[in-house]
Amino acid sequence: MAGRNKDKRPIGPDDIAAAFAKPMGKGPSTRQKRETISQVLPTIRAETKASIAEARKETRGRKSTYSRERFKAVCDLMGQGLPCHEAQREVGIPASTFGDWLNQTGEEGLFCRETYARARQALADWAFSEALSVPQRLLALALTPQAPDGDGRPAKPLVDSAMVGAARLVTDSLKWYAERLNPGQYAESKAPPPVVTVNNNSLTISGRDLDPDKREQLRTLLLAARDNGGALPSPDNGDS
Image 1 (cartoon, rainbow, N blue to C red):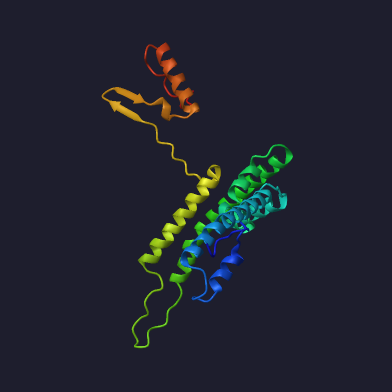
Image 2: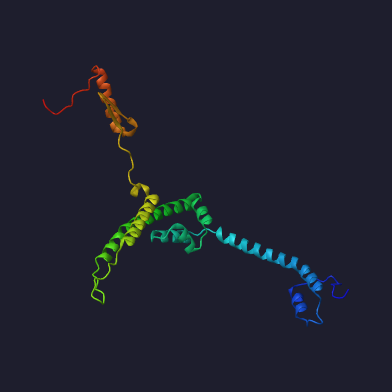
């Protein structure tokens, strides 16, 4: 049958282009074109898969190469106010690779963890400082003198309630971010007050709500009251 690949020669993309470039009246039929495409598609797919696999292999090779300078570049950007994931993207380090570097053993692992801890503290300092500067900038804008309109009416204020609400949202978000990055310095104390219940002549205090020193003082008073027949010792006012 005319048009078939009798010698079983491999058909490539150039053969397809040449087949479609022939004049309509003398070129291959639609069936012949389909057969040609079906024969060349497996080759194209195999070559494409090989190219993708090679690209992924090269990428994995680059990701696994540790560089102290690149790691420190990420931490330096964090100290300038850039979140960790954005700093990684800026330097070109995937998050998984950055995590692998943090989990290294030996001297380099210790260097990475200490540098990253300092970077988190610096980022927390930046976030808290920025949270304080937002209302200051808004206040400066509100105090900026405004010239009246052309028709003599007073100019509209530069700061409205919507801007105040947006500034409060930004400030609260930055303070929350600083607290999460460095809770030891920026987290607010949320210890509940001691629970004290008075019923008639009885007094109930929850010892779990007291700190260790106050619990020890309460224990000493209760032991003294037991030794005195249930009466608490009189307070020492310093009178002789």
